[in-house]
Each structure stands twice: as C-alpha cells, then as structure tokens.
Image (cartoon, rainbow, N blue to C red; front, side):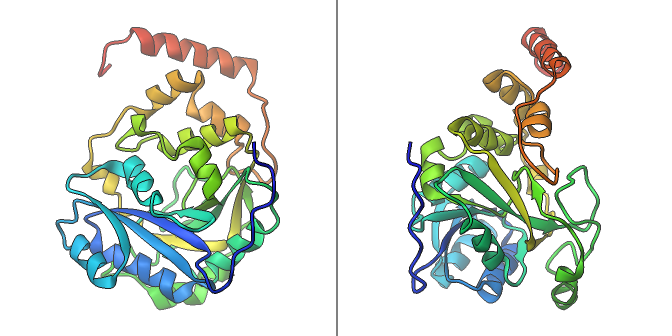
Length: 294
C-alpha cells in the first residue's frame, strides 16, 4: 500500500474537489455554492450531482458553468457522490451535503490539519453548527441562524460563528469531510448496497478502518452551518442498520462508539467489550430469523 506523502498543490490550481449531491433543493444549494465561493481561502473545484433537478437545479448549474453529473431519477447519496467523483481532479476530495453554509476560513483550517498528515490513511471533518440539539455530540448546537433560504440570518452567523467555544473531536463521520482522492479510490467510494444512503456513512468509515485508517479527526475551527433540510424524509429508507450488521459482523453503534470513538476528545481503538460483541451476535440471529417489517 502507498504510504508516501501526497504532493502539495500549486496555489494557482484548485486545492479540493468538492462533491455535492443535490435533490431538488435549489435555493439552499445556491447558498451552499455561494458560501464556498465567498468564504474560501483557496480555489476549489466544485462538482455537483443533480438528482432529478426538476426544480430548476439542472438549468442553474449549467448556467453557472458548474461541473456536474445528472440522473433523471433520484439516485441517492451513494451514486450521488460516486458519480461526480469521476470528474474530480484534485488530490483531495471534500464530501458535502447540499445544505451547508461554509463559514469563512473553513478550507484553511482543514488544510492546516491536512498538512500535518503523512501518507493517505486519514479522514478529517469540519464541524457543523445546527439549530437543534440531536444525539450527535460532534455538532455545535443549538444555534439557530435559519432553517430555509427565507429566514437565513447570514450576517448574524458571520458575526457569531467563530465565537462559540467547541473542541476538536475524534471520529470523523460527518460532512464536510476531506480525504485523499487516492484513499477514496482505494476503498471504492460509497457502497451502493446502502442506497439510497442510510448508514452509508458508517459503512464508508468502516471501509477506511479496514484499509488501515486510524486518523478520524474533527476540526472545530473549520465550521459550516447546517440547514438540516431533511431531504431524506422524501425517500423510502433502506434498512441500513441491518445491512451494516450482516456486512461487518457488528452493529454500527458498536463501531462508532468503541472503534471510531466518535465525539471523544482523543484517540481511536479496538476495544469493543465482550458484552457488546455478544449483544451484536444475538442481533444477527434475530435479524436472520425475523420476517421483513417486524
């Protein structure tokens, strides 16, 4: 396996290839793209996958001259990231949802961390600001700067986003996320058996883990406001938890908690307790014998 340091980029060339799948979410997508153009320190390549685009998204990306791929039906996030990645030309890929407002300097802080890495076995996330508290310990919440393009308080966000204290964290599993394009190619991108996308994120982290990645870091200063637009509410959800359990032999919760140690302030490890392994063993038995829909 390749272990050398990646070549540093020419400052006249794009630094990151930013991949954004979008499904009929044009007004928020405009904010996302606009924030990249306004608030980035470096030049970047933006590649959008347009799912359907019946709301005018396809015409808009064409008019803006944005590199893109397109599917007439909603292809989900797995194909939605894999397709545009075929057009990526930078050494580093950034995965992003279509409802993130990238705060000033986001890319500088990510790249500062990237420059500390050796080889290609690492994965680094920015830190999201969200308006509601959820089970995700890796986000800054609750800080409400708007839920749609109609009530978005951009100027207040710009005045306050970097004044909220929050530490760096472990267990990169959230977008925006940067990783070497070589690493993305080595593990084959997102696994399409998780289409339209539920649990594709922890599955991707597990593929990186099996490739030898142990640096999964979240950078506090690299911030983005997440509108939480919930496009997943429009799709028929796949049973990603079951797929993950049978594919890897353990539950995603065990992987995230004990190996990725997501949300912790330090380290990753291999310390899944015996009780956790036994619990997952019985989960597999139950899922193997139960009827669909139970």
